Length: 138
Image (cartoon, rainbow, N blue to C red; front, side):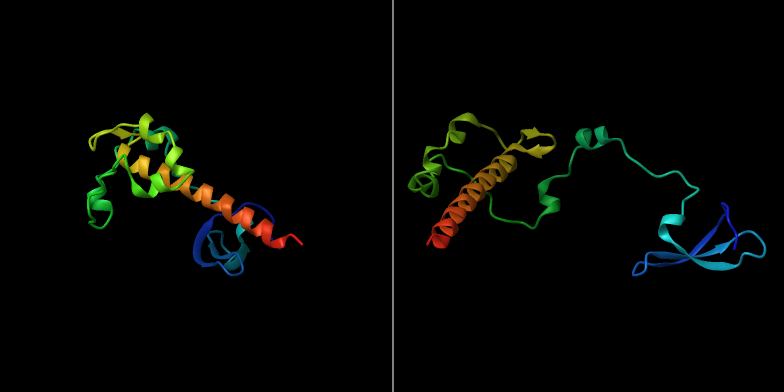
């Protein structure tokens, strides 16, 4: 049994058993299966500063998603006006943006849609919870 720090090359990775097959550089050690928690890299880890993500300009949505019909939100949406909760939402009066405006690299119109969807899902989740509670009452 050899104790110490030894260098070598990884020949194989066994993800099922969380082990590496390592051929050691030192003469006489040969090739062994080593648990992953006992293996370190000699190379420094490649990292990116978090600030790089905030400053990076994202590519146009056209190249990232399949083509779809242009969404033109109307302030008098029949879906939101007929819904007693969403019809009273103040988001319509607070946000105005054009297609060319971006916030954090994302188009403002996209962020409006994501925020609106998030609010709708949160309200529906609460309604489902209330219905579930009513169904479990005796």
